[in-house]
Amino acid sequence: MKEININDFKVTKTIRLKDTPTAFDLGEDKKAIEKALENVREDLGDFQNTIYAHGKYAVLICIQGMDTAGKDSMIREVFKDFNSRGVVVHSFKVPTELERKHDYLWRHYIALPARGKFGVFNRTHYENVLVTRVHPEYLLGEYLPELNSVEDVDDAFWDKRFEQINNFEKHIAQNGTIIFKFFLHISKDEQKHRLLRRLHKSEKNWKFSPGDLKERKLWDLYQDCYEDALNRTSKPHAPWYTIPADDKPTARYIVAKILYDTLTQYKDIVEPELDDEIKANLDNYIKELENE
Image (tube, rainbow, N blue to C red; front, side):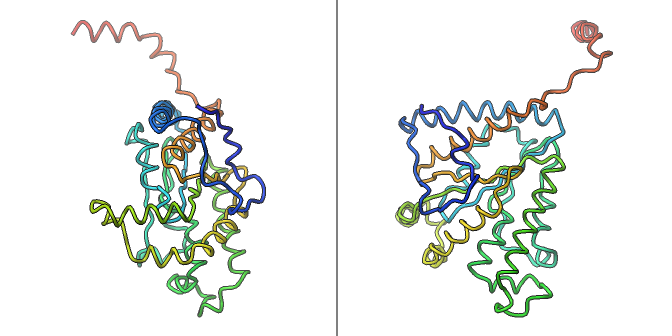
């Protein structure tokens, strides 16, 4: 298995998505990659128990990508060995009427993981600078006092919204949340292949929507919006990682490896020690149970 340097995927300088690969060769076949993923996710699952017992950090994992990028299967495969009590997945859809009565970050803030737990956002607060930027008319449903028409949505509006997102992430990072943001980067050709697969396979038909084709026509605009978001909001405390996602097993392995290698650098995350009284009486507790 080819060694990967997780920093090769981290956005630390201005990137151009057109120049960023959507494929990565690990030098192994699918079976070997899936086995490597299995090993990493088992280690990650064990470390999750330590984070849960330690109870001082939360972990937020944000997953974004174009339609068919593999977000759902990524979550299923990477977190398969997690204890269900320690991870919560939120799939954010179109905002409800209640959610639109609050600011756009509200529904994400109340879904944040507690200390000791992992939270996975399947689509995230970044939809508010992606979908709404491609479709600014959606903003009129947010009841914002300063917006009366699409013409009111200018560059200053987006500057302010990016600042709000950066402040939100800085705040939660300063209060003990470890943040990972993954952009699953697929090619337009691969998306076409996956959409056709949904149409050709009857068991996959339910995943297809005619709206997918309408959004596909806006591919270049979405890429521009993603590129701007990645460049504006990848920070040391909340980095973006661009994950080559044309091959799903490879993408899953890279994400799992980034999570494990980064989290295990936190040397203060250890299981709590028993207090001296309990430790001194362990043999007595064993005898008490054995003599029942």
